Image (cartoon, rainbow, N blue to C red; front, side, top):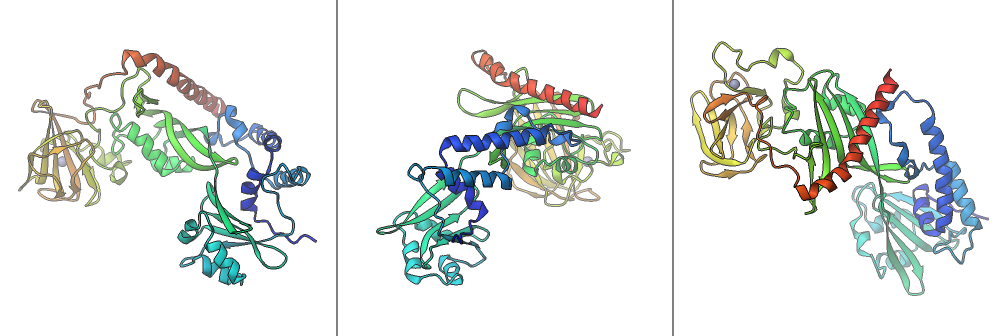
Length: 452
Ligand SMILES: [Zn+2]
């Protein structure tokens, strides 16, 4: 009689090893047909639409699939299977608790002490068992006489250790599962805030920060985002058995901010570094950031009454005010040299940076300054924190941008362009990136078709 209780999480690992490849393909084919049915069914939720070309790697794991796999394992020639499933084993699954180690887990299960010792001293990969973390899983297979036959320690969906018994004790092997990368799309219309609406569309915080960083030189995410702005992104998803494990890179993106379209694409140059470029091959990265602070902490995003302090106050106001909590990091908008880091009655704690002799940026009312006069700074380096020193009613950053000594609006000034992709790399750039822009465009069209 069979008493096995195979833990479902481990089925995949076991079968990935045990199944001949052809069986996996057959199972994948079945799964694919299922996915096609699911995806082709009319859906209202088009924001989470995914590229139909990539369906083959989105394999669901419904019960029926397990049954099919099970049947195939039973049928498969056990001589050809590397790890036949032993029908006489009973699996016990333990979630690692806070403060657990291997012996506390084994004690809970009242296992044979000699076996416990043998597993802990496995000839290979015994060290892995010393680093159990809460939330991980340990599954122990016990045979009909109560002896440990096998232990699987699942560290993550991607990494497991499997300890099996042989004549000399236990031997541990590492099981690493590789993800498959798939392109995913998303189109979002901003109604409340970038984060709120992106979140509603199922996009992670990390992904939105990636998006914001790509356009950080063109769009002031603190003050320029408006209701009705839209963005479309193509990004990588790392998939395992049809489930998303994590998000990868943004491959292409477009952002329409106040009616103006910005486009960017990821390109890996000959030197192996990845950067974002316009469709024409100009780097998105520019000499100055639009907003010299973490935009997520600026409080005036969607309050139009607070959006126009520039040049509109009674007293001439020659900069931009970013209202943010005290302590919010302030970045150097561009690389340069600190020409002043000091304190004055009106400005409070302030920092002035000179960039290439032509440009100067000023940062006033800081709580703390973290750079000294004469110091070189890199773009994005923290130079201080938001405060309310000097003539300030509340914590905010007053930011000024000067070209040859003349005040300019940093939010609208045309920034100097960096050199485009070299002539030699241009052909490769077009070849690599054109399909991504085509995907963006076709996705946008599909969106409109759905919406109309
Ligand atoms: Zn101000």
